[in-house]
Image 1 (cartoon, rainbow, N blue to C red):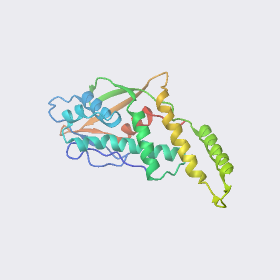
Image 2 (image 1 turned 45 degrees about the horizontal axis):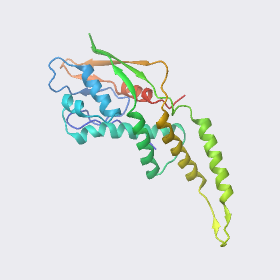
Image 3 (image 1 turned 180 degrees about the vertical axis):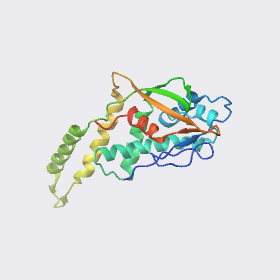
Image 4 (image 1 turned 90 degrees about the vertical axis):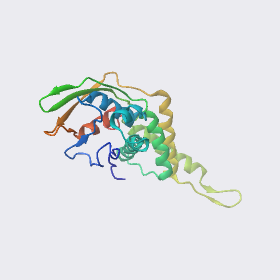
Length: 228
């Protein structure tokens, strides 16, 4: 599974960009003096919390385009989860994983601080309290894989009717992983210390604002941690 790209609303947002390119122009409809903090707050709420009213107000566009912010953020997180833990899920399993992680992302905790005008544009800090439940799962996933093997071995063989009984161990393992991830939603754990992400938003000579997409990726990786 390749890393999916952050999708931005057509007309209101940038064209689809690969993470790591120079940056993208930020639409600030109706803002003579850019209220960058309000825009960023609206963008994060749209992307993580699936809450789009404020985003539509400050960026324009339609509801389906705004919904793409959340859809692709959730898709990206699910792909990163599978890449992190070397999981090959089918379409149905990926759909369930996206539902689970989407619900977790909706409970992310972050605070967008007031922007500061600087010579190059704007400087903003985002204070994030990361969700930790999906970080460093290797030992637990190893246990689940062993459980899947044991359960498969216990039921495989020949039935009383003479039918050969087989179990797809990998599919059983993946279902156990999904069950575990879903269980975590009822007991989300947050880091004890917030982490501050600094954003450098450049302003061009034409007045356009540009945001380095690597900075958004850093926020994505922080609100719900996967890597140890």
